[in-house]
Length: 227
Length: 227
Image (cartoon, rainbow over all chains, first blue to last red; front, side, top):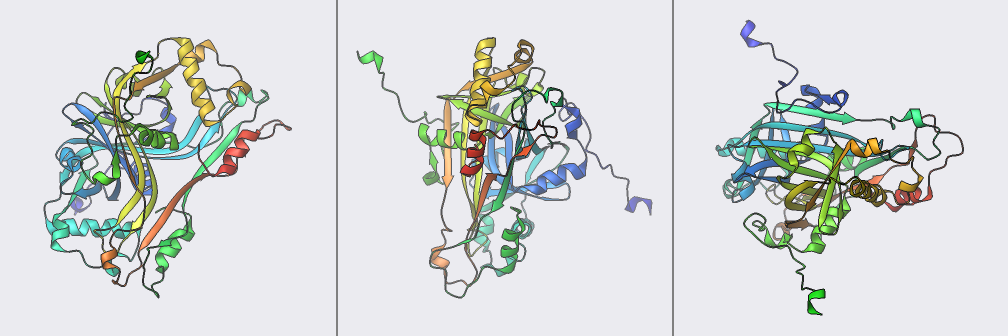
């Protein structure tokens, strides 16, 4: 029976690539810490190398277990360039400005995750449709089944990349300025928090009368979260 | 006299690297369009290549004319790796979710800019201090002169990278779902706008009595902008 539950580390391996170098106290290789950042924002930045030069493309991602996913047009250079190549996918959230008594001690409160792996195109149409469904459902619970169903042509025109997380680092800073030794210097110090939220929904022009905002979307807007 | 005012293009050059491929209507190489995105958010993602592999590091940037700047510890691998190397610096802002009648037509409203160039370390201490002053003043007007002055040791411990923008692309989507041909399908469609703002300031623990939030910071919080 032992093989059914192989021991699994809760940390990603630490290598030269991902080892936290600066400000160790802020860094973690823990899966839970990495997942928390990946799941807190829909927006990521995907870095890849093309002809030796770096490219960073913003896109939306989603996660299932130890895999991250993103998608785009089947004709996209971005997706074709990232396929079967080493990728660094980074998520970051600016939580606030940290204002200290000196310029040097100014900082930001933030959450970030860098994940490393090799991106693979999903080839199977059903697997692709299933991944896209999870993408929509993760953001907007209950929406997929209410939509005009996806056509085979639309699945074909969409590429989905999946990347197993081989290594990852999460970094978080949260708190007041650390320069309490200079608290006597007569300048205001503290934190200006940055917050993101959903504003009231804007119905599409020409939306037929009687179609109300679905309850899960209303609840999401109400929640103060952006996903 | 003609040489005094050499004609200057308002567009960045269009090359294989930066040519807008997908959704041309959303893309621009115009300087004003690129500046507008770079100046709208303090957060950027810097992509660089180390031993052939991509890295994407979030950081704060600032801009002066056709140069972007970012900074960090003089001991940072990130800064040393990006020096004298090709860099792609990307800024992006998620402005909203665009919900259509089909999964395929879902989209996001966003603003993004990708800028390409080669990063150089500022060597001169005065130039470095001047750049850091602009960084602080851009974010928090009037703050620099109110701070405990920077020491020579602090300038030394800080690296500043400057990158001339050689090529750049801005992309923007803004508007309702584009699937008006399917408006009869009975599902809610429209936009869920995402907004970021500053929350009320949190004074540092132990801030001496009588030190009030400076008026420019109060005005910034009031403005609804995050910079």
